[in-house]
Amino acid sequence: MGILSRASYVVRSKLNAILNRAEDPTESLDYSYEQMRDELQDVKQGIADLTTQKKRLEIQKRRLEENVEKHNEQAREAVQQDREDLARKALEKKKSKMNQIEDLETQIAELQNTQDQLVDKKDDLQSRIEEFRTKKETMKARYEAAEASTRVSEAVSGVGDEMGDVTRSIERAEERTEEMEARSQAMDELQDTGAFDDALSDEDEIDRELGAGRTDREVDAELETLRTEMGKGPAEGDAAEPDAAVESDGVGDEEVEAELEELQQEEDADASN
Image 1 (cartoon, rainbow, N blue to C red):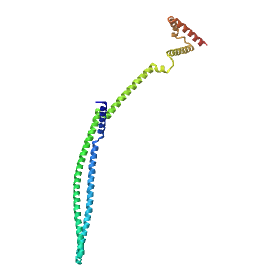
Image 2: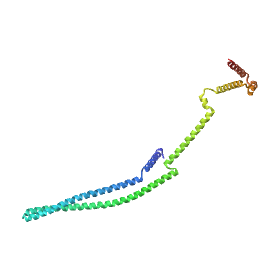
Image 3: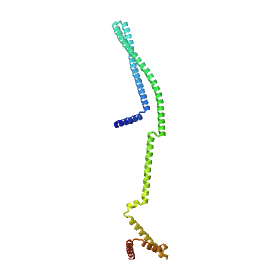
Image 4: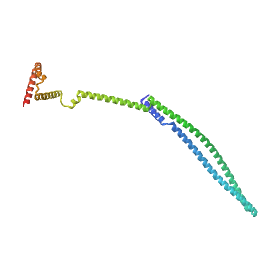
């Protein structure tokens, strides 16, 4: 399988997963139920329209029947008055109205037949809707129960999307924590070795040692002053120092010793001034 084929397969898989998540069976069931209810409403509206039309025809029929009775009376009265021409005319109108009544009765019968069929359809559709509603609610309950069970199972087994995100978050937090701990330990180690002091100071090792020596001499001088003020003699360690210096002089290099002697004399001269 080539790269493009694999990429297309991955894209299709992702889209199918999205569509599966987006398709909610409960929504489909509700939609079908609403469609059936709309169809039932259309049938009821059709029955109402037929009933209205039939009532109009029945009203028209009653009016024609009244006219028939009127023409019949007109014919009797014309006969009594020996007006055969008027009697004939009244009977002709009566016949015309009766023909119209027959046509209306035919139309009314057809409307009634259609209405009866729609009523039967309405009753059947309403029965099927009630049955579908019961099945719909049962199916929705089963789906929601299965969905809840799946979520619980995924949460327990750790295969759900949310649990996967939580696991990855914990792993990233652990990695970050370990990195910060290692960095803190490295900073402490550099601080103990004086690496930060070396980086921030312009002094080299000789300057630091000379500075330490000056500090020691200043402390010794101040200590000697305190001893003199308090009437104390020199410390035992101070008395032993000349012997150690003599011993050290015998071991050092002559040129270094001579240079040190000159530096000592210059320092003594500066101190006396």
